[in-house]
Image 1 (cartoon, rainbow, N blue to C red):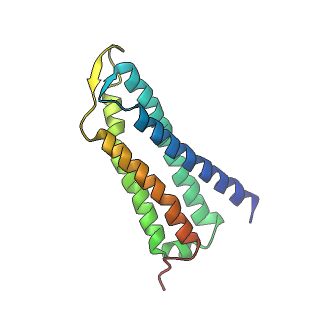
Image 2 (image 1 turned 45 degrees about the vertical axis):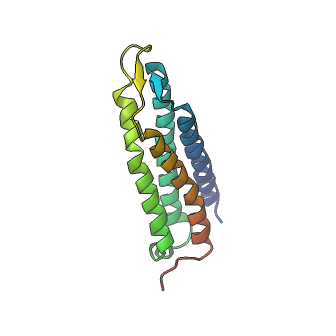
Length: 148
């Protein structure tokens, strides 16, 4: 185990924790009626969510390609494909809240904005998906899912 692997894995774990905690904070801050100031606050939290997702992705790919097991191990593992597909789906559905916050960020801070139906459910789905990712990683690291 190299120092580069240890540091990259540590960054990966910290960014996963930041990803989940920022997603949870976003969920807890969502209310049916929001002020523009609250929308701006949610947008800042969403930026942290997006940045941490990018760090999770980059550190995970760095380990898979250069630092961990041979790349063929991952490419021949259906759980690896499931895990990355789930990560991409989470990223795609997270675009809806991001766009909502971005579109509603300007204007008077006292303006009231109604939260669209389903937005809180989308954030809930993001969190559920994020909770599944470590389980898939554990299964994959344990040798499950290898296609012979």
